Each structure stands twice: as structure tokens, then as C-alpha cells.
Length: 320
Image (cartoon, rainbow, N blue to C red):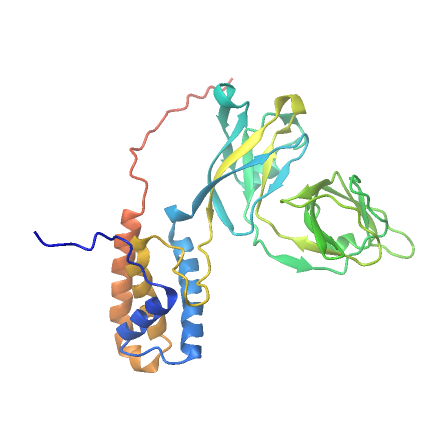
């Protein structure tokens, strides 16, 4: 009986993966620029994969403990979308999960009283970029760690609700503000207050901030708006979700990629196709390499799917 290796660990680190793709283009990996341009193409390739559909290996479960009266909650900046979500009460054998219905922005905007309280049953997912934008907004009054109203110099640079980063001495606090109140004066027509603030959001701590030496930036975190707003602490709610995140960046040359082994052929084929559009001598191979890439994508994506049976539950609705 023939001996086998006994191993199932084959993978390609970044250098080997790029080398294989160059060879398929009839070329060689020779310079540091070749490596840099290939890394850039890999990052673009994985972004394309996110646009093509759900990559199961990027699905992660998370949870957010909800606060009384807080409508909006932030997600990590690499969040692409949510797949499912429930609100949970209790723990252990007393734990109860209730499905939360996803609604669109137009539907959420027509809810008459967004501050109504109860157990959240609907959610609008606001798919922001995750980028932080600098502003010229500054504090006009010092903040303690417990203040829920923030006085700022220019509300015209801020949306009516959202997240900001307040940084003092290199320490950053993320704050959710839910209302903006203008307080114009003859000196500054853009003065205002950020009210109904929730301090220490997104894994940061509430802190004191002085007027001098403090900066404010807009933090465009992906977030949700729930309805109704969570009720009193006696009914502690936890928002449980399953999110799809971005594939991690290509790395520095010695890393393996943030993909399962079954997608390695697809990544090599895709990178070869991308590179063929940049290597003049490989132009004649572009059509073939694209065809090969699409075939490998179909094979990988067809395998990378939920194989559970579908279940459909009819909903009976009555109108008076």
C-alpha cells in the first residue's frame, strides 16, 4: 500500500500566490513594484468578492448590550452587512430570542414616534463607510465624563444624529449624539448643542475633555437604528447579530490570505486575470484568464454556501 503524506495543510503564502499568478500570465515576479502592484490587485479582488455575494467564512456573530432610550448602535468599521438579528432577554434556560425585522430607510423614516420604548422589533441598517473625517468643530465648553450635552462651535459640519470621536491628549472617545439643537449668537451663527448623548461608545471609555487641545472628528461607523427604543433596565435587551465583514488585507508577503483553502485556486486565477490587464505581454491571455477566473469563482462560490434545507413559514395577516 502506497504511503501518503498524512498532511492536509497545503496553502500559498502571499509570495507564492503572486508568483503563481505571474507565471500564468507568462511572466515572472522580479521587482518590489511587481509585488506591490499584485498586493493592490489582491485587495481589489477581495472587495469584488464582497460585491458578488456572501462569503461564509466572513460571517461572525456579535452582540450589543442595549441601553434604555438609545436608538442607534455602532458596528465595527469592516462590517459589510447584517444577515440576521434578534433581541435577547434573560440568560441560560430563561433566555428568549425574538426575531427583529429588517426595514428600509423609507419605512424607518415614516415611523411617527421613533422614541417610543419597548422591546425592539424592527431595525434599519445604516451601511456607512467606516471612515473617520476630520472637522474644524471644537468644544465651546469643557466636558466631564458624565455630561450628556456637548457644546460645539459648528453644527453645520455635523448630521442631525451620528457618531463623533473626541480626542484629548491622544485618548479618543466615541460618542453617539441623537439630537442637534442650534444656539446661534451674534458672534457665531453655527453654535449648537449635541443632546441626548451616549458616551463611551464602540469600545471606548467616557472621559473628561478640556476645550483646549481637544479635536472632534466625524466617525462614519456602520450602525443600526432600532424601533422601539429599548425600555427600562428591568427588561435588559441584548442585540444579537450575524454580520458579514470584509476580507482582511493582503499583508506583507509572508502571510497566507484570509480565505479558506477552497478559494485559493480562485484567488490565483483572479489575480492572474487582474495582472494580465497590467502586463503588456500578457494582453493576449486576458480573455482566457478571465474565463478561467469565472469558472474557478463558480466552483468556489457554489461550494461556499449554506447547505441546510429551506423552510418557509406563512404569515397570516388580518386587516380590520
